Image 1 (cartoon, rainbow, N blue to C red):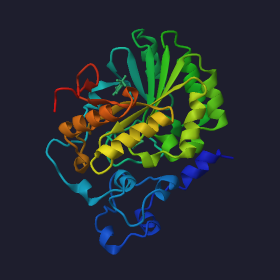
Image 2 (cartoon, rainbow, N blue to C red):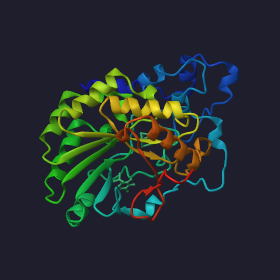
Image 3 (tube, rainbow, N blue to C red):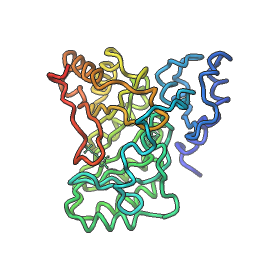
Length: 327
Ligand SMILES: *Cc1c(COP(=O)(O)O)cnc(C)c1O
Ligand code: SF4
């Protein structure tokens, strides 16, 4: 019997027509939608239920439903904007920054975000397991933190995750293990007791970085699921992407970060959009990013203001874009 969350995931919307019917979309508004995108629709019911009917401007609609805007060709917006393939070690590991490496645990996600910077990535689906990647980590004692990313690492079964975590936790120089996941926002049932029990057995300090862009993604079930993780002494952080029509106004941005803080989640990064093909309609200027950060800084607690960053390929870290003196 598959776990409950897997059954919920099977109910995801994958047909655009079925979703537009569900959302009572008018003929007029349907003309805005791209009905056969290369990066297919994949949307949990919980998120679909939060979208206002017949409203293409809805911030969740914009994040998850393909618009014809995806066919716009804008110079500079390319498939591998971060030149990630040049940084691969083995088939599933990036070691770009000094003390940490990032493992592509899977290509699968709970949902497909239209602005995803890895939507063009050719995930390796042939090789089973992570032997080559873990042996690279073992041979590199400078790596003290391993990040489980993807795709979404919580797409794996509890059993596979447990095996992976146990192998990692046996590497003596690994002191921290971090998850990058969007799963709990779409299917909070994923944080089941079995998963929590596995986390509780790992001796290293764990971090969970969720990815939430709009306050509508947070609700009581999501917050309760994340609270169960925090009760294990695990730090939960959030990263957002600055997206046009989603979180680029002062009130929404402040509300997002306040609601995260109210739930005990620390806003970590606000990423400027990576210039990835088919995402140019989400672009927001760096200047606007500074304005939003400045506004949040003036209206809420210091720890509820994320760092504004951009990723520049070939640099030794995310590039911090200091808000002060830049306006
Ligand atoms: C973003 C990223 C990290 C994590 O960077 P932090 O600044 O520590 O959050 C690690 N490895 C890769 C390849 C990344 O892209
Ligand atoms: S959950 Fe993350 S990896 Fe998956 S589509 Fe969204 S942004 Fe991309």
